[in-house]
Length: 424
Image (cartoon, rainbow, N blue to C red; front, side, top):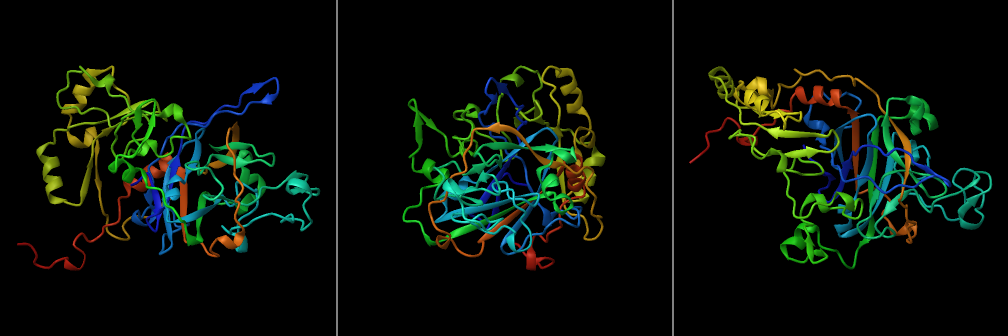
């Protein structure tokens, strides 16, 4: 599990899933709203879970494949800012269910995740553009290209929250069960896929200057300051501070499994000695998630001793901050009742691939304040083939749970030394 998906280690993406914005209107029509908060979602490698649907893409030497759980009436935005610290400039081509969110064009066959620029002619009709890339037959102005790029995008603003309309406005990605609200469902119908594709292209030459990543900047004590307060950019929370400054938390820290905002004040004085403070306060579900210290029965302990490849999870997924009696009751229940015991590696072939419970579409929601910036470089500036690709297979939360319950792949812990006599 991770919150930063990567291919070749340094080409990365974070999948955020905040609650969707509701469209707002004024005397001038629909209002453009501020960007949603930072809300990273856990992602899981497809190759490590045998219960994944058979039609999901697998990873390779140049591709990584993950799956994430999503919910209806939530939004999505893709954060590529870690690419700003690459030794080369990076261009990012995105496919949302099989269409490009910047151009609306179908991304299959020879056009699949291909880098394209539009300067002189309409790519559909082949006719010359009028002023500002206006195609008379299309009836709208075309963007300069079908990708995001570090060359034209301001520093630390390499993200995309939705579908770009011809007037330059962006409509938020939203998840919906309504087929007729899905953009790809309306544009390409049965040819759509229930996945997101990302291709990373590198510049032909290295950048003359490579900024330090947040971790390095923190270690060297060269951080950003606001009002005399140092912004803790070493924390994942601050990786895209310009996206949604309203969600900043100064000096916060979190575990690798946490999400967007933190508050530990509401767990004081509950009278439960061995309850830890909450790992996260998850703004997506308005609930607090706690780690409990369970008391295992002798039977449970014997099971764990006999099955070393078993992970123990004791997470209570509901807010019980106002019910200390319930917390105390759960604390003394036996392990599997508080949490669950789950295999960390079922035998190969013992887990059958599942079929997704729901099929969620990605629609175009409220207008958000965001720009897709033109790339000032010519197409020859970029390598002809992608340096790496990431596939994001999204599914409903129930499907995700079934996949995780199927267990992870059983890797040989000791590799070639398995079954050999080792140790000092």
